[in-house]
Length: 243
Figure 1 (cartoon, rainbow, N blue to C red):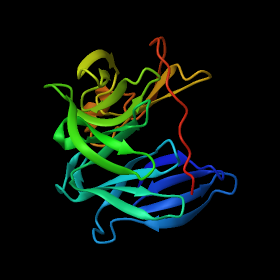
Figure 2: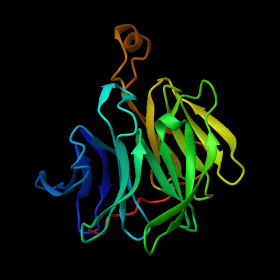
Figure 3: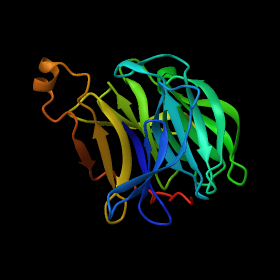
Figure 4: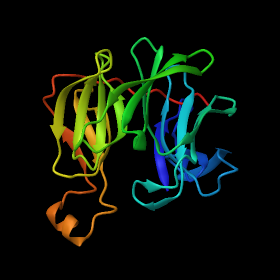
């Protein structure tokens, strides 16, 4: 099960597959395991991951799912992986480790543990990777669903995909105010990122897993990836893993 894929400075990609951080050679389609995490939790799997501005990979795990978004609680962790493949556990007792991104000045890590229904912030030291001073930036409201994947735009604002909410919400992390809601024709919106020639298009992924036959009939586009244009904002290129 693939949780995330990020670009790699030396070429190709790095992906979270099961509990393994895998190197993916796109040209030969060969995958090589670099390192494993959560060796004491064999039922866990990697979920979301992202690379910080200096090339360090942050990736989180979650417990075994009985059904989508129904997991064994507090089994997951948040790890970092450096260029020499040193693995450090920063958080434990996580339910579903999810969206990650950094403030424009790189001093704040925004982080989502989905079942907490909050978007949190940490003070972040990009030299050491140290996290501290956890606080809530935004608490999802009734009907907004579960916070899932997330990205930051060039103005430092957060875009959060809301699983079971059918939307992406735009949040000002300085005020905790929701500025905008982008509604999608599917309920299980899972993640988002900016792309296109000038990073002005928002790409949103979704899931169909967990929908019954009736749900799939009502949402024929479930599981699709959507492009949202005309938002008037731009995103940033992805950081690449230094390992």
